[in-house]
Image (spheres, rainbow over the protein chains, first blue to last red):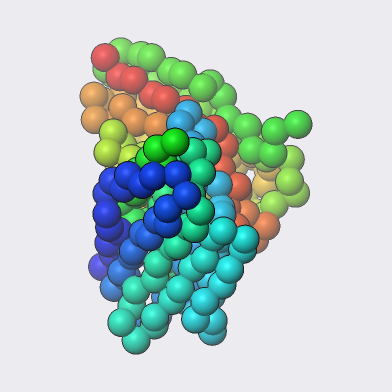
Length: 113
Length: 113
């Protein structure tokens, strides 16, 4: 069945450093890849997404890259700040039009001041 | 003015009881979802409704029954609660079905004793 693997499960960086989180997916028909940030006690919030016709997308300090051949995509956060500390989830949406997202296992990012 | 609101925020109950979680969105979205987040933070879709029509029904025990009286509301009723039902349940909505941004509620922490 559809599966999304996310690594690492935890990531600790110093403030100002970069953080990279990687995901691989199994369904070759997947064509939409969002990233969600979940702060403690809150619901996940979309921070960036990428569709399969694009290889890279940037939004200020956040960027996502997609390699459809290898079936993997990554989140890059530059100049990390303590408020970036949260759990980050990647997800993929397969073929069809159901809105069904398959989420990765999550990465707990800690940014140390 | 919360976009997706769910109640209650916390729910503590005994095994065997029946309970309901309510969800409302004021975004005018057509599609609503229920997700379950387990103790390891893993997010898994349970149900999705589009304009009151059930479009996603994952392998969830039939003790779980969603009800959508109108497209702004999606409630979750759980019969005969079990210990393994303890989790955080998130309601979400999107403009329509497909590859769209999900707006999550703040979650309901269910503890079954």
